[in-house]
Amino acid sequence: MATIPGPLLLVGGGRMGEALLGGWLRQGLASGSATVIEPDPGRAAALTAQGLAVVPSAADLPPGFRARILVLAVKPQVMADVLPALPGHLAPGGLVLSIAAGKPLAVFEAAFGAVTPIVRVMPNTPAAIGRGISALFANPATDAANRALAERLMQAVGETLWLDAEAEMHAVTALSGGGPAYVCLLVEALAAAGERLGLAPELAMRLARATVAGSGALLESSDATAAALREAVTSPGGTTRAALDVLMPADGGTEAGLSGLVGEALVRAAERSRQLA
View 1 (spheres, helix red, strand yellow):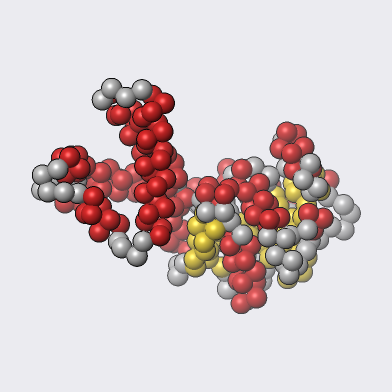
View 2: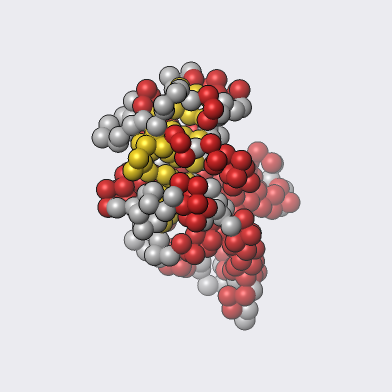
């Protein structure tokens, strides 16, 4: 990360912004190379304690400040209020990186110009522990060097992959962007079901959390498919098979049981992503 050119300007020091900063700092980015725009006093104080320069708005940046890298980490609902003040603080040829869900490249090209290198990214919250996965898509003005720079920035918090079409961002947002929430809901559901079967709440939650976390680690470490790992646990006529008969009915296809419910949920999330665009 020491090779990343500065200065870097992060707009939004919320959870994802803080996770990105943590990853960059752990990888060797000098704190003096980064400036954060964060209006919340509590978050600003926490970032300042890490040796970062923090200002409440773009108007408070030092005179003549120009960022080589501008990372937009604010909620999409406030992007329209934030963007107008930023183009004047981007150095010529500087890279713009946006992690705002639903906001297409056209929004940022309108603000910064179509000749500006702009990369749209959809990360997810495991980035906070360096275990995220980010999907990237760049506009035509982004050359190989800036693509590599964007990838390097996001690899500080996990895996990266490039999309073939910007339209795929809606599905990525629905699947991996919201995915951690769905997995956490699964943990809640398992724990609640365990309680109904007579387990103490603390015991049920401990079992649920460890089971989901361990299963994720097994999936990551194994070359086997998810289906193969599922089948390895499922004995014919056994207890797991009895549960799976509810979750994936043999006569229901992909539209029934858990698969159908998850499919409907992702369709809803993708539709909302398109609305935000």
